[in-house]
Image (cartoon, rainbow, N blue to C red; front, side, top):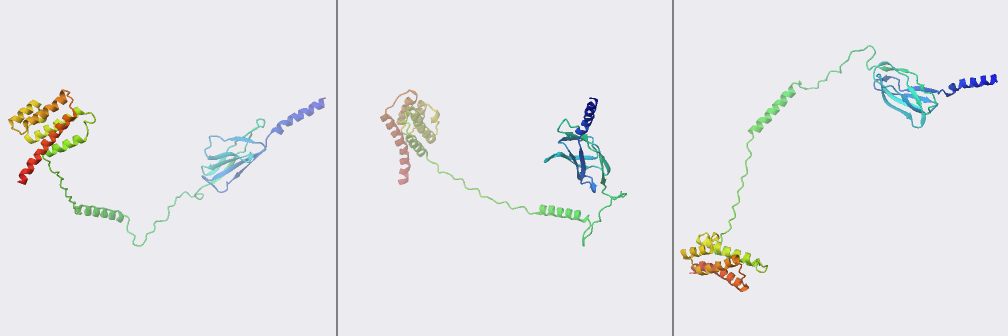
Length: 296
């Protein structure tokens, strides 16, 4: 019984050794390493790697990439670059397994040597070769001088430039329409009023307002008194004072229009036609009066 317990205790003491993980690491691209040159730190284990714990306090290295190999979960690659020259040390980092039963392990720290741009012991910065002068090359100060001379010459020519002759445009002669005599203008307005067909539309009052205004405008323009602003009685007085022909007929026409406009008289179609015809004949009579002296 004691022997059996001793064997079991021995096997249990070997169990941590069986769970202890194994790994390997290597560096690639560290030959002739310079500042900023990337190189790889590759970690291979016998378990699936969840990640590596890289400290945030690194000052000598810049971590460019840290990832697991897509086709091999037991391989992790860290891509980094040195930030300083000389011998640099990278610390141990923890390898975190996917399986929590596996004991985490740490990589071994390593050192790399980063070459300097200058040769060892050489601290003197040397300039490039002096500029080579070409044949007929002018001194540097000549070029700004030539630019100023060209600028001054351009300003001088611009100031001396003769003014551009201004093209004269002849204004077109205003088109003057021949002035119509008062009777012809009134007759034209009457024909337009008849063509509107206000009587057929039932606008009898509006028709007589405009019919009266045609005669009043003609009287005002021909005999020079404000007929448009006068009442029928005032127009009658002005007609007799000026001894205007057809005074009674004019007075009758204006009274007829006023009755339709203000007294709500409803004229017959015959009355409308007769009064409209009288106004047309009255206006046409002035055309005959103008033609008779010409024919004579």
